[in-house]
Image (cartoon, rainbow, N blue to C red; front, side, top):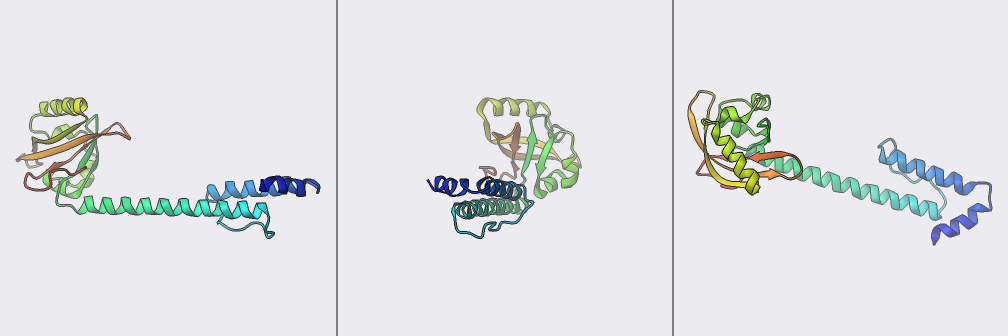
Length: 188
């Protein structure tokens, strides 16, 4: 309804509507691409000024929501990093997508070394355990408190209770080996 009034007023001029519409559309594009700061581009208080202000509010709210989400993700990552529980995430092929410092310590390796590790299978004492673990995981979409024997870099075996579930946003598996006497469900 507001735009019809603007069209009637502006269409009688010399292309003012087209010029203002194009100016507003270009501003929208520049702001969404991050090439321009949020600002008022019209001095007159008409429908175009109103659209400009509403667009600015939408962009500001979207940016605030994104910042809140990133802040929550940072807090969660910090919690996982500082937890006295070993967390790691693998892809179906066994490559390690993520391992926190405690898991690296349990494995007797550095986090950087684990990030370049070819397959978590090499950490299993019995490599057939990985196959049966994956079969159960793919069948049930999760595994809870499965005891699996891993091997530290030194060759020393260690028993870990593993809880895992299939990651729905990607084709990955989140494993969570944890010392038996600590938290039982690391990625829930």
